[in-house]
Length: 109
Length: 258
Image (cartoon, rainbow over all chains, first blue to last red; front, side, top):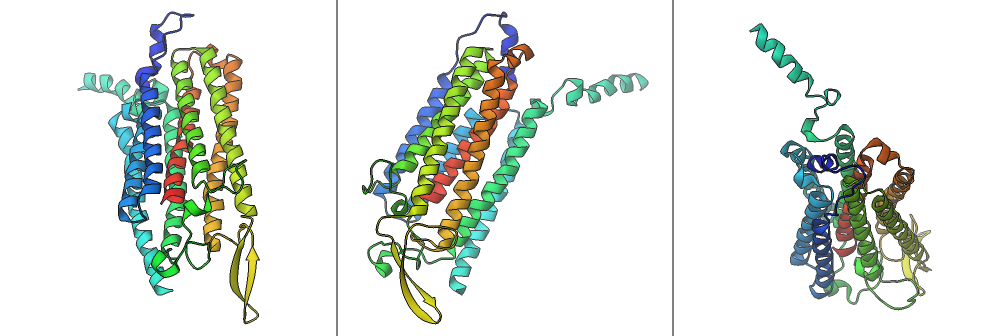
């Protein structure tokens, strides 16, 4: 947000600039369409690998738009972006490891 | 050599917030909010990964083995068959419709939050107030919806489910309605436990988000940020609010859809 926070210094006191909301509404439309698409998939495809993969992909895309646009991370410096994304990649590893573990518990029961 | 040493020393000092230069080109408060959100990400990840682990350790529903789907504690339920009730439409099966409405409410309140942040950049006090109010309204509507969903989940369906259990060495059949932490008409008790913990922990975050939003609205309307010269507090609370929305996106997928 660093580039935005300097904006109000340019404007005269008492004068309010025009809203710049195009990108916000674009992101909203993308998120809504993706959620609607998830609903469509939920009732048209049978449970299985393909359905789960589509859901996971849609979720990651939605997360990208929320974190990138709404939380403005896309416009931050690279070091901050990586400081946020790198720790999350380790979560994926934890998820995969424990899902496999859960499968083994099922076999052992 | 001494000349370079004296010119380098102030440059080093400036790499701290106190000297006026911001590491990662972001204010102290915002960076700390990001680090808090990362730690919160781990907490929610732990809950959702636990859901995955426990789900994989149970029998999955398979039409070839179990026939027509009905609630049974022998296999993990299909979420869309559990969450198919909508307020004022009693007895009509509308799978995931109410959860979908809740998702849109939260996404929309995220949009109004980002509009409030945008208005803050322009020092537009009236617009910040307006959008903060919409955001608070969205948060409260979501909490109300969640309260209804919990009530329905706890009280159960009209018919209930017949479960078989061993009592004093004998198989006994019993009809149970709804779910609590030890019994669950929809499936294994662990399913209800995870529902309460995951959506409950998220709902707690929404509640604290609404409280923070009300505080920000209050301070905006009294002109505190206008006098301060910037609306950075709106941005910081906005980060938290978007995070709550982000978590719901994951809960929606991994709890309700998959």
